[in-house]
Structures are given as C-alpha cells and as structure tokens.
Amino acid sequence: MSSNGVRSSGRPVPAVHRAWWGMLVKIGVAALLIAALASAWFRWVEPHEAAFERWLGTLGPWAPAMFVASVALALLLFLPKSLFSMAAGAIFGPLWGLVWMLTASFIAAIATFALVRRGFRSWVGRVLDRHPRLAAIDTAVGDRGTRAVVLLRMTPVGFAIMNWILAASRIRFREYLAGLVGLVPGTLSAVSIGFAARHTADLATRADDLPPGDSVLREVGVYGSVAASVIVAVVVSRIAIRSIHSASATDGGRSDATSMPS
Image (cartoon, rainbow, N blue to C red; front, side, top):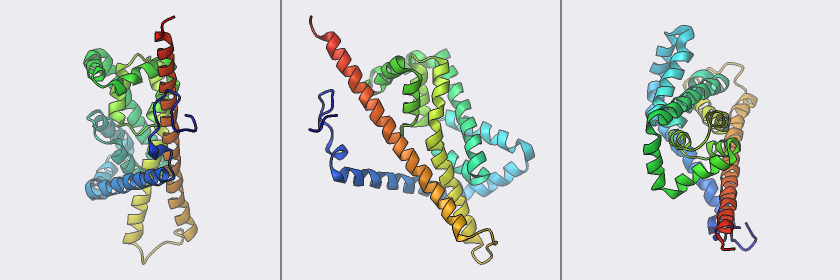
C-alpha cells in the first residue's frame, strides 16, 4: 500500500484502514464481539454447563473422548466453534480445554475434507463460482499452499465454512492438515474466555469463603492471560488478513501483466 491511500493493485484503501479513528472502530468492534460471545455464553451455554459437566463426570476417563466426539459432530453441523471452545475452557481448564478443543476441530476438519472430496466438491465449486471473493481462496491456496491455509485459518471466517471452502479447493490433504495449526490463536482466546467466565462464576458463588490460593496476584494472572490471548488472536488475525490482501493484490498485478498485449 502506498502513502497516498491506494493499494499496489490500484484500488483505494478504505478510510477506516487509514484514519486514526479507524483503530478506535476496530477496537470497538473487537469489544462488541467479545461482549457478544460472553452474552451468548451466559444465555445459551452456562445454564446447561453444570448438567453437561455432571454427565461428563459420570463417564470417568471417557469424558474427554465423549466431549471431543460430541463437539466434532456439532462442528460438522455448522454450530459455532467459539461457544464450544469457551465450554471446553470452563470444563477442562485452559490447557486441557485447548487440547480437547483442537482435537475435536481437527477431527471435524478432516471429516469435512473427506465428505467434500467424495461427494460434494462439484456442488461447493458451483457455489463458489457465484461468489468471486470466496472463489479467490482457491487461487490463493493453489499458489501458496500451506502458508495460505494457515493465514486463512487465522482470519475470523467461520470454522465450518472455511473447512468446506478449503476442501473444495485445489489444495492437497497434507497442506490442508498442516494449515490447521492456524486454529491455535483463536481457539486459545475462546478457551481462555470460557475459563475466566467459569472462574468469575465460582468467585461469585463463594465470595465469603475464598481459599488462601485466591490472591490478588492469581486473579491478575487469570484475567491478564485472557486479555493477552485475546490481543494475540486479534493481532494475528489482522496480520493474516493483511497478508491475504497483499497476496491477492500481487496475484491481481500478475494477471494484469500477463493479460497485456505484447
């Protein structure tokens, strides 16, 4: 992008990406998104979380496996990944919540790849043909492989939708699989939010009988880690989006050059 507010492809850059108030808008949008996730958690997940956790408790060592299987199936049905990530953090804590949530996500992604490649690839291709911006993903992953998939996984596009788009593209399975590492920042952020929400609820229910371990330093660590994970996820997502835009502009410049008469 040049200093006069025009991309290298010749298209003008929106003012929201150039003006000082653009950063305030983006911070506001991020805050609203976090508030929306928290609201969705307390409205739809938290009322059933205790019953679900008790049911998992009756399964003993099979509880993580049942959670992973249930979440993988839910993700295949296009249910929002962020809510299940928050539930994983609330039930299993930040570490194991991340492990089990990534496991479920990997299983759902692999199952979607097999499903699309074996029966729905042509149908998804026709849908993408009607949406040029989505169809451009096929060009990006075809030219840049794993790097493009990792960057796309870091963008805020829905998990299930991205699975179908990538599975219908020209990408090879090993690149598709390696690109799943891009899920880590966003998943860690949502898992941390879920853990913090559970921790806050626990504090509220036992405010008069806190154990010695609940010190101010511990609370700062809990909420500080949540803030850090959210900031990292937002920054990484922004870098990924910029990289994809830059790659798209480069591809556009190349195509324009190759189409010029000699």
